[in-house]
Length: 389
Image (cartoon, rainbow, N blue to C red; front, side):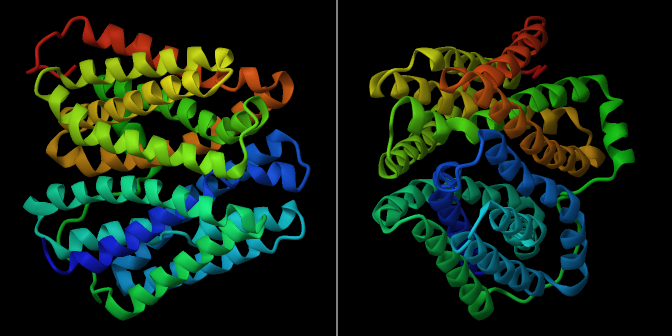
């Protein structure tokens, strides 16, 4: 591996560990501040909304003044944001912290851009493959760290996250390679006109609409999952963290074995369809979950389905897009991710607040059913590996 990647991947890993620490904790704010589930949905939506607005600014700025300067500013702001949340006297300060993190929290995307600076184009796919491992490790180690700190009270997990961001900042200052953009880079932000052009291709538009249904459904579930665990199954914070660590292990095993095995035997849309089906089964089980055994079955289906769907859809999008459209198509995917992260949590928490924990998977099930039906219609005429859609 290119030695210049070690500090970059180290920073990305720390970011993912911090994410793994804090994600199980965010919905606990509903209990701590005695707010309605919709408020939690809005809090989840705050971050992707700010990212959607500020993302192009930081990407362009890092192209002009260098990755390191923007990364240091971003990590410094993230330390401040999590300290604000840790010591928040009321929910308004939490929203402020989430907004600061959303506006300035571009450290992971800037570090990913630095990978493109550090390696030749033909080696980028392999280098970006390390990101999946970093994500899996982060989401495994983060909840385990959260377990050890959960007994320390409301502030402890958020202080831990601030400390991890500070560690990443020190690492960036000391070891991150000072560089500027050069050559052709993967595109992560797109204009509205470019989005329109991409959607004028009916085949690409079809897959991207599927992706919207998928991500609205998944972000809807992620925003109420901890609320479901704590209200329906009476999980404490330590049990929630342990559950997230188990999920991360399933994701790593799926990525490490199942995805590779299936891509050799089934076309990309077929893999996505299998993933959609597994997730539909998972969300169908949600109202019937009354203990850990069925929860584990549901979670295994959900994790396996999510990884298969993501692998199949991204492969389909990159194959359908022309060589000149590759960056724009993936940039549209990033925009879809952000917008879905705004819509899904709001819908799910409204339903949760009105109908209770048993309805937690309703929005997700509806969205995944739409995606599955679209996938079935796409895959039926094309049953060979050579024709992905």
